[in-house]
Length: 363
Image (cartoon, rainbow, N blue to C red; front, side):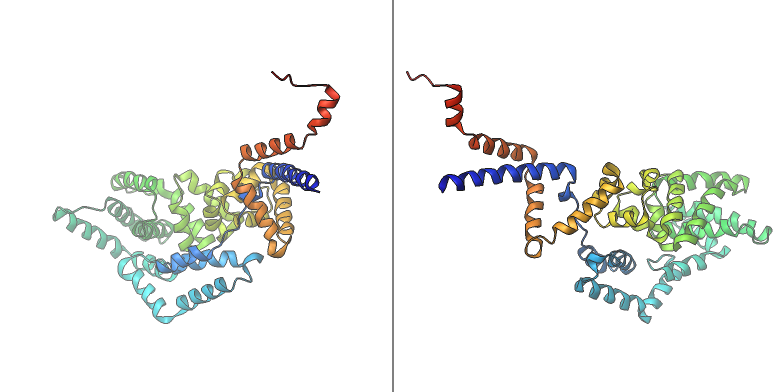
């Protein structure tokens, strides 16, 4: 009886080690962990970033695994009530007019509207001129944008509105600058272009940038355009992000964040993947996209379906949770060592000695 128990234990170790090794390298279940959006949402609320909190949490609420999460539902309702309140909306609208920036679309629209006219550029130039006169730091980017804005305003008046895209583009970039959403590459580009425009009075060199920003705003709105712009490192990357919005629309900023930009850097390969699969992968974060890129869409779907089935094994999926822990914390060396030792101990040494006739010499 004791021998049987001993052999059963060793055989179990061999089977478990083999299965864990195989599953670890074939499906890597332990790297696929669903994102819990609640902690990050709570952090955004504490920072009074209600727009980002709503965008983040509402994205995940469309997935089955979150629909029964009472805490998440309560949190979403709290955010919606806050954003819908008259006091909050009034504050954000005034914020856009008075300081030229806001995190709410309403405040951002009022900021752009208040800056669209010529007086906004003159005001900013006068303000920076005062800083220069008082030997204070001058905002070179704001000066560059105001200079471009003056030329764009004159062009708009002269062409009876045909340069309105350029003027709205400058107003949007001012909002982006004040919101700290303009990346370094664009700051340098604007300062350089402003010097030439001051001499030539021609803003045509900025036309590709303005058209790209206009296209983005029409597809995803002001707030998401600011988010996408801040994540770029060049004009070509900005154009690449704009192409992504043709397929993913308003989900683009979230997918860009959750994939750690893999959706952009591997756009050619991921464009052939079904959009529903892309959304499913995003709920696992970067690892979801890594699985698709390495194993393909079919293997990823197969893996997630198996995970869903395995999670029902045992009481509340406890067996599955133990299996995941084994994959996560037991590296290959430990698993191979367990497999080897158990195999050696299970070998019938007495029979081997009898068959081979081997007898150790005693001194």
